[in-house]
Image (cartoon, helix red, strand yellow):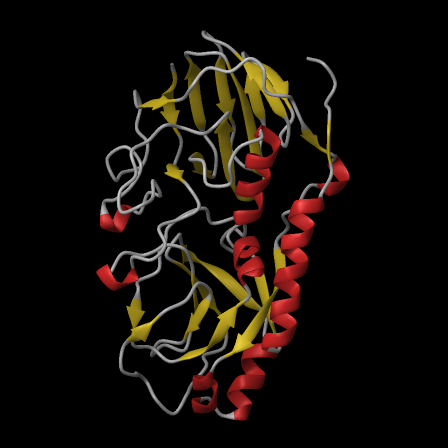
Length: 313
């Protein structure tokens, strides 16, 4: 009772919501880069929010179905084929033993989430199934999926099919404004440098991955080049010696010694993870109070967003 990996694509990883409470051991969080697409996939399947799904970066994943279940794909705009027939993203599809699922290369955005009813049955490590390659933890062997890997799941023929209306689906473009809560180390950057950071367009570099998105633009200089290492939160914006900011994401190191301008709002950090190299980022400062309100609004929206019954296949 499983799905079997025929082709894993460029980078496909098993992920639950993440490995929390383990920073004191030096273990980072991991988990889905685009939490919105991940959670909507769970809702469309009627799953618990912490079920294990596959995160596929840049597409190319092919799966052979070996049990009857309901399957859903969310995230980047990429062609989805089931037995060679085009199928909609953001929609639950019934699949059965002998079917083949193919996810093409992403056209807009870069990360998809592939789930089945109640997720894939993987043994947790340190409280989570999230795969972090640098630490060799999570997933099947602490590694990315490979041809022939078996993804255990339970059979299901009863779960209701649901669909997210086209008007409600996220749109992934090539520009994004990221809201930033300034940090106490911002005082180490002169006003001119701060204005340069917030007024300049930044380009996503080729060195953008699950650990962090390195940006390219006018160098930002502070009056210090290093600090005593301290804990790093999701979205922390480090400025290393070359002056090119790095927005740290899910697989970030747990501590670091570069000065930080602040932290990107987690909602925007998730959207940022769908940007491809060459995309443009702008930053806008917001207060902690505004950030708090934005997160509450996003949590409310995720609970209230309507789902509908799709046409019969």
